Length: 114
Image (cartoon, rainbow, N blue to C red; front, top):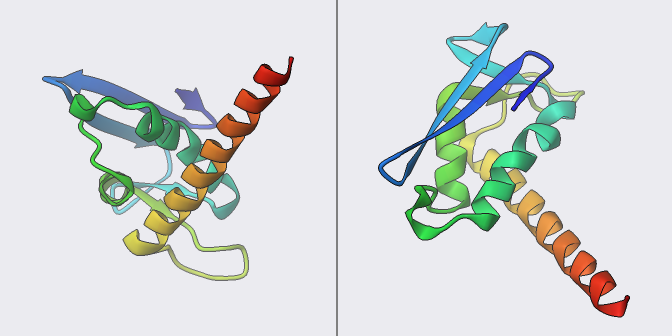
């Protein structure tokens, strides 16, 4: 996935996911994701988490939050300075996962009605 300066590559090595994130504007060697871009950035990762097989390497939302936190910092909301913690990132991932699962259920219901 390549968009707006983000270059995200997922490599499968022996049934494990290695996440490589590269950004032109790094902070302490980590990519900066603005508050308004957080959902868009997290969506592909959460979709991977939802649709993964057990051997894929992601063990849950907390594991994904820790992996992403190694290479990325997420700015707090617009009126706040600083970056969110791993716990807050985990909460954001959980909220997004619920929203995406609800969206899938609604799509499934629409298809059955047709």
